[in-house]
Image 1 (tube, rainbow, N blue to C red):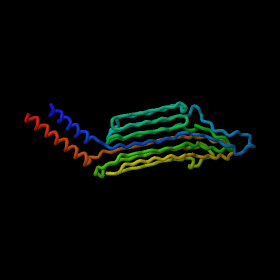
Image 2: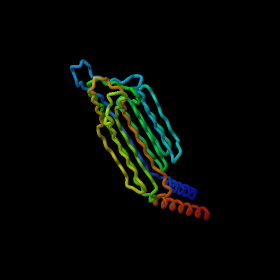
Image 3: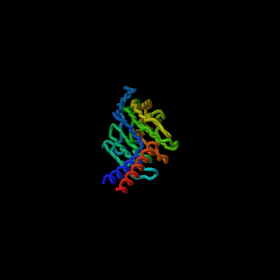
Length: 268
């Protein structure tokens, strides 16, 4: 009986060593969204205003998780109700991803838990043309707090082809659909991209900063257009065909223990 137990434990040890993998984690957050206006001409009789059309406040959330080159889980959601908070998540043994949006936030997170695991999460709200009107002679400021966090476990694999990566984005933007046109500087993106090939130390990146866009409408016309807040991330831990040295050593130990257990059982 002891020989059988030792045999089972040795095989389990070998399989555990073979399947041990590094993890890639990421999170992108855009929170505390605020919108402020300033009257640039108090004598024109026009009150400063920034109005979002109730019927054109689409929210888009997309989350997916993959293993190797095959998609294993995916979900997305479109809605006319940006003011209703919404969340989605997917999870498989090799990866998971989550995304959520609301009237003052867009948040995403995910993890690739095994070699070959990948995740993607995207939250944008609102998303449509002609979703706002901005009064004449008005200064508009849209601001939020952005936070990015990513981590990678240390990898001792000597295979130079092994790849781990994290892409994180958090942004706010304003687009005009009719004159007077808003300059392209009315988009502010805070992003971080890290990729590692082959062996590397553990990686941890954490940073938070405010992001904002400013639009000044000095004309006598009302500006129409769309604005958005978004959080997006992608992470992957690619397949590494060459096992780590420590994995090989533990596997050999497990095989050796199997042999000893077998010989002991045979003598018995």
